[in-house]
Image (tube, rainbow, N blue to C red; front, top):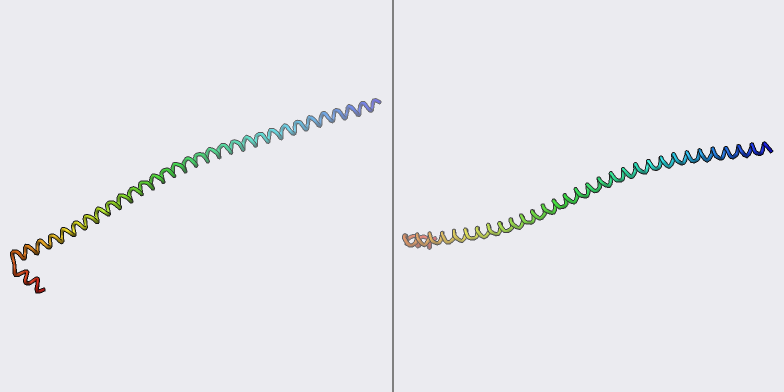
Amino acid sequence: MNTYYYLLFTLLFLLVVIIFLMRSFFTKKINFLDHNQSHREHELSTFQKQLQLLKEKDQNLQRELDDEKSQLALMAISLTQKDAEINALLLIIDDLQTKNNQKEEEIIIEYFPEAKITKLSL
């Protein structure tokens, strides 16, 4: 009967040792996994911050691009208006030159009537 108690005591002792070893193993594993998870969470938060900064930078660049497009559109409109004004001034200059040439011919004919005859013969 003593051997049964001894065997039972040995089995209980082994069971306690096995439970203790398993607890220790799983505790280390849980700590390791927690450390890995916290490291990944830190990397994730760093990545999210960088992503947010890039998004803000992209939005700023997009705003600047839109502003530049608006300025270019305004410049194009201004250039179109200036081109129309220049064309109108060129037409006025051409008209004035034509009138000036006619006045010169009238003056020449008025003071030199023989120039009219020469002109008609040409």
